[in-house]
Image (cartoon, one colour):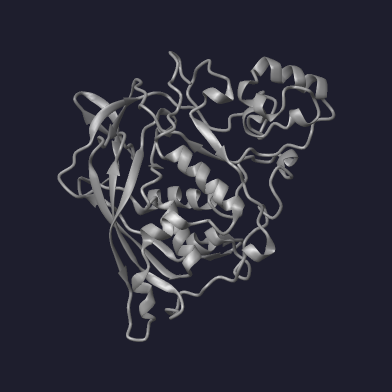
Length: 364
């Protein structure tokens, strides 16, 4: 989070997508990797990625540019690239929010009060016998065992000669920072999971967006010893807006540059492929946030489908050739009203039409 005086939830550059309950029927046995199932979908998507705002994916190293030390963009053989692992994490986060998927890792560390802050079934760990749709797609770890998942993201390389330039980003702080300070390991209750409105007349959930620190601390003091059970507002996604400049030099890829790469999928059913296509934004209605600086509106990118290649055999059903990934993305989630609401909210947040609030003089 950037340093500054903006403390109201409505002034933050993000919004929340509700976490959906995971029912027993939402979990299924995983599919093995050792064969191609003729009743499932296997192939690859050839994609083009375009940068909409400056993109910063750091390599972890530094370079000397123009006499100053800057954080370097990731490269392979001196050519800037977008690692498949970076893309996989972003797409997985979208898939989780747009489905009834588990939350394998709580944002709170060692905070027993937050164990009950999630909908039913969300915190139950997936296994090979019963895995949620996102874990079936992207894989999971269960103790000493794990499942590799059935979607592979390749490295994306520039379509034309592309060179990083130096841009200045603002300083950013740790997300989910403890407030108040004695709330160690439990993050910021006021912004993320406050439920005071259930037991006090503070204006209801609509007032959460305008609740100040001072007001919240007043209610907390009155409720000490009988605090209501918390409930997370949802998964956090950053809005999009005009990039905020700062004083920290980073190498970035400027808007308008294009990268090309492939996403391979293996033994998916129609629902799983539709979720993948939606999370990639193939219908053109969402733009992803990638890399560093998303609170400052850096890293907005969009995908465009260039080709779909089905891994065909003479005995595979011919009907898969008629599937359109764009239409799958456009129609995803219509059979579940709760999923449909989340899909609509994600499109609202990530379309770029709803702009994030401007930063103040000292931050957001």
